[in-house]
Length: 331
Length: 287
Image (tube, rainbow over all chains, first blue to last red; front, side, top):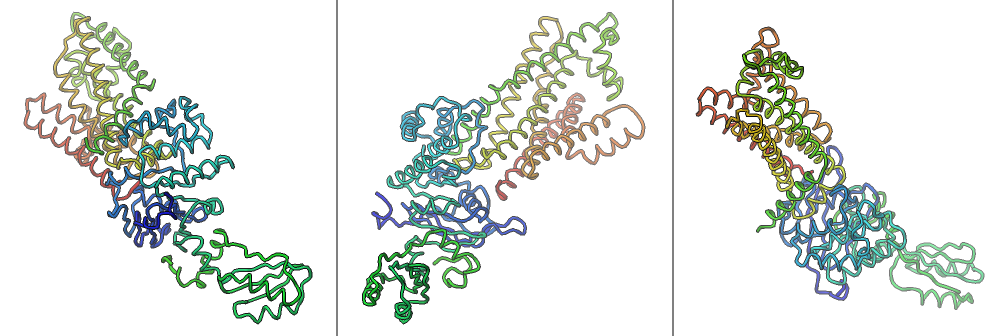
């Protein structure tokens, strides 16, 4: 059952309250308030150095917050609560090799299986390795694995204990297109099986395809926490509509400018670029204006906002446009 | 079995397996046995009708010259008064302690820099379990080395008819306390100093300093160095782990059992304080 099909499954699994981490004078995470709900794929997004990995390390108890509180499974989290940690699977950005110089995939997974007290360990490891197509190379030393294979092995390790939450730090970074697709499919499958997934990535265009909700982080501050649809709606006040015609006519421009929701019209070649201040579907109305003016539109496109565009719009310089996202508070 | 205990057991088992499957451990054991063999055979070769004559063996001549330079003539004769085993055991233990602790600090640093520590801490392992696994691993490996050496001495004493003094076993226990003291200093340094090679360097310098102070303090030589060392030794007595070891041994040989026991207790508290301090520090600060 996926996130959207289970509308009742909105239990808060993780929440942070004014979470802050300072390293000397540098504030890596600044008053972060975020909520991760059960069953969703949550994207922790932002450019390199924005504070994503620090946030993950805080959430998982590797770093201690300077101030603020983290709640996981309804409990105030601290790293000594091992029962909470045992319900979380983590795929870190780095792939450690020194778990034994000649260790193979089976020994590697077996060690973690013992740590998590996995029942039917051998069967579970076998079925997971088959699932990620590593079964054939299970006896090969892991320091001979490619980056893609290591990533899949790391995901297998994280899934070994059937965690409730899966954290993936830059899961597709450095992977080839096939590897990206495989990892993406794996994430979707696990989410459909009911797992809550938190993905940290700077590759916004890649993760927007799979995430239900996002937290856009910039300079340690939360710019916005929402779904792409909601972000689209919020930023929709500034949406552009592109209408293609055979030969543009200035009279149509003046007609369009009289519409209350039209802010600006410009003509570039055979295209009208109309900036509108509503997120309503106005294509029908625009179509009739063009038709009545004897300019049947060849196409009307409303380019969808991408996360990258949303991020660029929401950076510090433009924050004043969005009262709801000031100082890293939630929308 | 609790989750924490299970994690400690699995991690410690893995660490011990790693050491026992590493060739350097066997090289160390072979080296220790070789050193012991050379000392014992040289000692046997030096025994004449009037006692020990170090001039018979070049190795013994050099060893005596070094020891007399450090401790004085009477102390050196005392060291060998009960045969060569005590000295060779003390020397072997120091080498083993040095090896184990340097190995631990390097491993700690390596695990931290490669992200292995993080990976462990993502699983049901906390800082306490992580450090305890190193602590227990070291204790068990030290005991294994001790057992190998004592077995070698028992065989040697039977084969060469050397007196096997039971105080050797007692000495092993006290050297074990010294080992814990030195190990916990290393662990605390590693927790506080962020750069792991710096922590190894500081630890080595500190231990060398303590050894030099201690050797000079117990030396019978007179002069400025001796005076300064005694002065430092008195000041540093409470932090120098070697001073505890020598206090325990000296009081024991002087039949002052109560004093020896109290120093033993202080030595245990010493290790506990350093170990707990490193745990509390890491628990508060994180990695």
